[in-house]
Image (cartoon, rainbow, N blue to C red; front, side):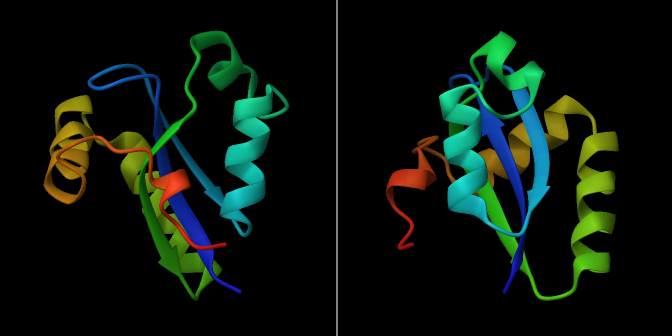
Length: 95
């Protein structure tokens, strides 16, 4: 089972949230349903704009911590590089 490091956004160039989970579909659903983190509920952060799988939880945790420390401009550049249209990847992934 892969571990996922993901970024949610409220809208293009909007509020960002970096997270880690072993069940991406469930976790994004929780954020969308208001069951997830209070931060995402408060700021309407529900659009999955970046997700990367890891087989090793230690690597995933290190990546999540690294991304959380990144400047906002670096996170935006990562999203723009991999998902320039800011598509909601939740709708595109095969669960």
